[in-house]
Image 1 (cartoon, rainbow, N blue to C red):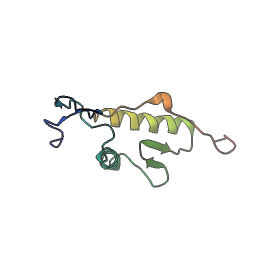
Image 2 (cartoon, rainbow, N blue to C red):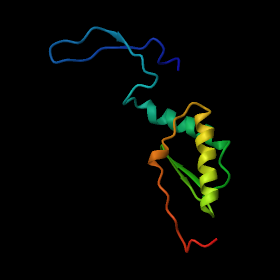
Image 3 (cartoon, rainbow, N blue to C red):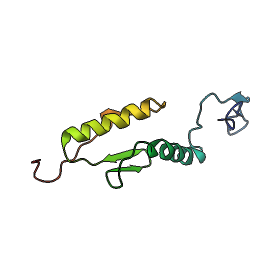
Length: 106
């Protein structure tokens, strides 16, 4: 956070640069550090919540949850959502997709 405090920038134009202005966003869009910092934070946060290898997988900003039943899946997804949102992250449940494998009898 300290590396972004008081950050200033200019917009480069063809004939001249803009006036210097303060950057007021927390994470600079397009920064090479953004993906690395996100992965570090997600890894640290998710360690506390993960239950078993191959049951919950993180890939960049996606999460795969594997469960025996639909009820277990919904419970686990809600636990992840609540956990992350209580730590300041936003979770978009509208992008959630479910895949059912097997005969569906359990």
